[in-house]
Length: 341
Image 1 (cartoon, rainbow, N blue to C red):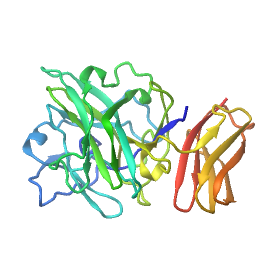
Image 2 (tube, rainbow, N blue to C red):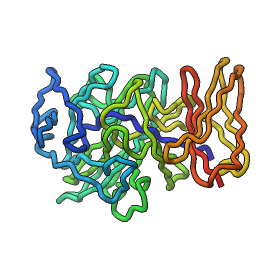
Image 3 (cartoon, one colour):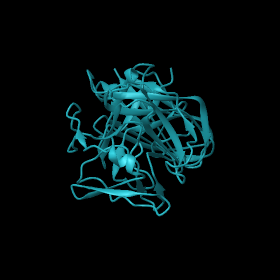
Image 4 (cartoon, one colour):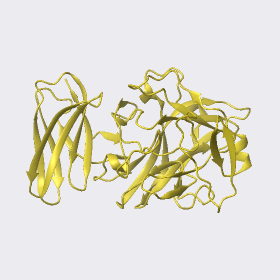
């Protein structure tokens, strides 16, 4: 079975929380009816008073491990049929209004099958309901009609920190009835669909977090740590929302799960393995292998002609465990995970 990878965008999730020391400056937009709430010297911007009234203090999730020198993830909380929205300026200068998780296709046509979210915890209200996720045009904001809305997920089917064995157990998938095709930047968010429940989504400061998540099977996920960038520089806040897409050319900078991609075999591997890929034109490619701490354990560069090409790997000296691999070209980067037995 082909493995699927999740790659997080390092963008602001305005519906979720970070510490007062780490949140970036939020920007108001003259086209919106906005208000600002001062909390610990930091200004949070909301699109209406109803949303602001639902805001709760950031919460540190102590169940999740500290990653290196990073603090534990924080959360924003959405409750009672609202989402908290704001604005954030991306590192390359484009102003995005009322954003959830920014997802940039880099101009490639992708079919979005679902949004996957780290739901830290949930709280049942007086009337238990369900949750939905949606994707929006980045220029329209929360006031515009969504491009597509997922099927609802019942309160009881949302994963949270209750009884988790690890961070990868927190993933909740919000699936669209039919895939939505798009070739422009969009943003995704989750909200209370009905009822009066509360939902909390994980967020981490710049340079921290779980990194990428590999889908091993319908019920199993594996995570590893790394630091990712978009637009050539990291953004200030990372939050845990991804999009599952059908596209063979998705890399780390595009922040999606690819339903196609590289072919690594055998996986798990013992002494030797092959990384196979299709190359549309002549190119110099670099293969990089890292362990789960982000330490580079192997790098090689080769020139290839167009066609089906491959790297041959000697893994006999590698310690058992999971590794990431990246095939990096001039305009493209493909990624995967393998297990060394």
